[in-house]
Image (cartoon, rainbow, N blue to C red; front, side):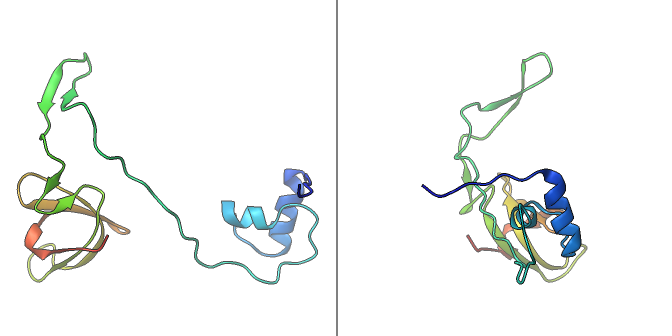
Length: 132
């Protein structure tokens, strides 16, 4: 069994400010406990996300619990599913440009894409390419 040690939160903050690290969960894990100096830090942290496999309920309820909307009976439209990572290159128009992010599908062929800069709504499916 590996030895474990504990340290107060003030010590972590002191180590973090002394080494000039920004406050982040991953860097706090690096600055815990008795520490002389930090020689190397990570610049990119990979995060894994998961999306569900769908929902059993096929209606949306109002505030009283009565059905308000009917949801589609299928999860995929035109080969895309909500939550897929996609790349859209829109040549002209108001939404022209390159957009990469999570796609939200619709039964019509007009999808939304959530990028790092915000959500772009109503991009036609012919401009999309599936990444993951």
